[in-house]
Length: 222
Ligand code: 5RP
Image (cartoon, rainbow, N blue to C red):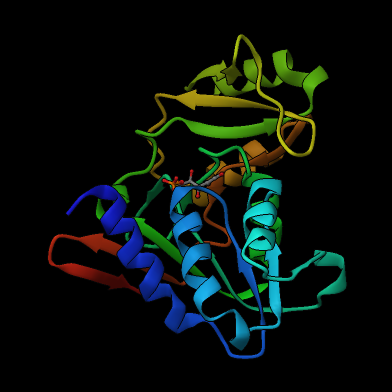
């Protein structure tokens, strides 16, 4: 199976976690896009969705799925999203698609976080994927110094020759070389750096269920 076929398989499997009549929290990225395409097939069964990025909102709307502002919603039964890495406890690195802040906000409202990913994303120790950190632009140098002091190698994310800006108008610093043996502690430490908006470590609110695509089928971790 190709990686896209594995992503499609977990996206399809995630539909069983969608609650009829509810508003669904929807993540960002290529796996989340497959999920949106599956959600479109059952759109008559749901009230709508809350999106974790402008890109996701556009794709949902293009499928005719009503997109709600999170401020109109008090709770979500489920949030479904991909990950760049996930460990056996459900802690994740996210933000490869630069949507980490809105992803973390929408996930915080959901009763259940379902992570959908191809099996290659499951790791023993998080950190081989450079950890994304969303930062207020004027603080990027001082924040990078703090991140280097934590043992990583920070690099500003650049696209088309200039700093990539998130949907929130901030920059992303990717931190390579971290071996994250205590995700909860590192999440708290990085969130405490002045100028950091969000760190792409999802440990405090990790995945409750992970659907992982493998050649043998969809593997479920709870
Ligand atoms: C976006 C994310 C994505 O969930 C993560 O990058 C995985 O993306 P993909 O499904 O394309 O592998 O966190 O900010």
